[in-house]
Length: 290
Image (tube, rainbow, N blue to C red; front, side):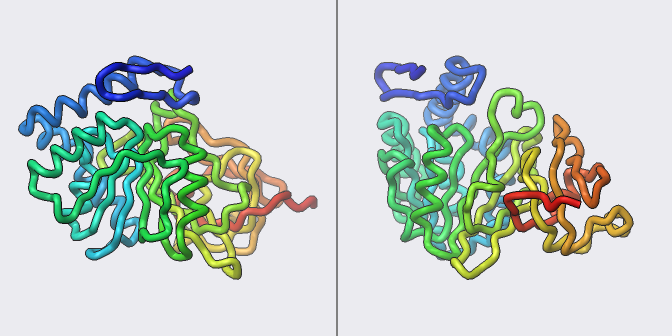
């Protein structure tokens, strides 16, 4: 059920979020406070955003001069500001007109009007074909529709950078399910720098002739595929049979950043989550029978 707040547009919580109203309104109120108290904003941004955004940009291969869209910029656009500092031209959008207006004031006050543009728009129907990368925030709703729109409209070679739940935050949010959805993409996954409860998922759009690839850590139980690379891995992986060309099926993903349990050639192995980030898999519809 949507909950509306007067004065600054509406806030619509993600229906997958179990703690709905209080958490969403609290986050929105905190970002509005940052807009009124610059000292708080600088400390909050350095503590929670700056290092994370720089790590996301490096993971996505974003470089100076790239055009970037940020969906769900909020009333204090920390992500847009950091990307602008990295030399990107940024457009931030938010479905809340009050948040968009507050973000424009922040951008003007901080002298970034030439590199950051703020718009009131909905992520599920915004055009994305002109951008080199699109950021999608964790609180964006409806997230599945927004991501589908962004990925469909992206040009080949462009990237979608999505913040996904990790650790205890998975108790509140449903994680993204990317394997087996037919996306022709190369998917990377990494724990967000400085944020135990978030992981960064980078989705690079591929040409129709290229083979899709996903990190093992981004697969959900029941999904299967063929291992294409282990990026060096560890000698133990080879001994366990985790090597390119082998078929693999995820049977369980342990909570709080625990191991990925997978089946290979009739036996189950536990793979550390950090190693699972480095194992690349081409998704398949079925696990081959023995």
